[in-house]
Length: 245
Image 1 (tube, rainbow, N blue to C red):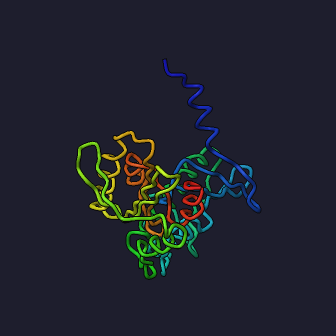
Image 2: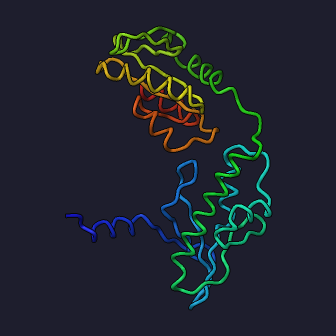
């Protein structure tokens, strides 16, 4: 039988409260596209409160590499169904009572997530780096004498060519496979890595590196992780050095 008390305690434990100036910061269950949690701030007292995102949705979107931010008018259009308002990039509720506070927190959190999603889908990014070229430069800098481009045969007997295979400890190798945020690339990298993973060869290690300056959905990243361990490019260097130490 499902233990409702345990589930309730687990859910409550995932909500964190911390002081934030003249208010209280609430970490919610909602997630931004980067998989970071959405936080909102509650201000007020007695039976009059206002909930706001303190501009977090705009900041989250800008951190992904945008060169323009959503205007207040655009934000209001995105969140109008929630009955919320926006000014100077901050999403906020009208004054609510204590009994309405839980719903207000959820509304602002979901609205902030929607604003970040819309911004990343519709606004302009700064010029993208050449992710694959930068990865090649990084690998060549550290593993120049031990890295090769070679085909690897999977469990299905199909061969897959990888441009970056690092050989180390005599009989071990690490396949470093870059993926871009495109359905065909995601599918191809998943199929190749999963087929090789099914070999169960302990001498073959695999890692898929993705460009975390791009806006990835959690579902796409979860799919890729079925094929191999995934790693964001911004944190790749120290992890790769540790893996082949």
